[in-house]
Image 1 (cartoon, one colour):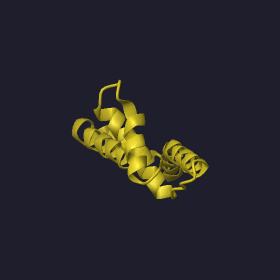
Image 2 (spheres, one colour):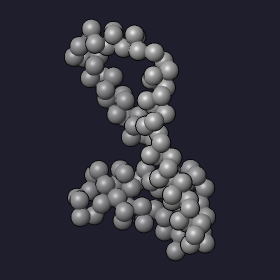
Image 3 (cartoon, rainbow, N blue to C red):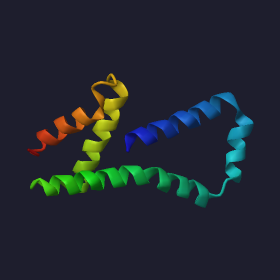
Length: 102
């Protein structure tokens, strides 16, 4: 959840420092459209966290939603900062095993 927040902050800072007219035109965008965009950007995070919850329940060690969200976020961050061969899967595995998942 911190990654989309960081991206949003980066976009706002970039717009504020490069083109003030464009930033001013954002006030014309309805709040409902911004809320819809934010909600839709959260859908993959929620569904992937639910997927982790389902799989950990399947193996007999159920995890809560926020723990699954942390594991997924750690995998996304791990895949962003490690070489492609490592990927986020091994980071998620490490985080899950630290939570006691066999």
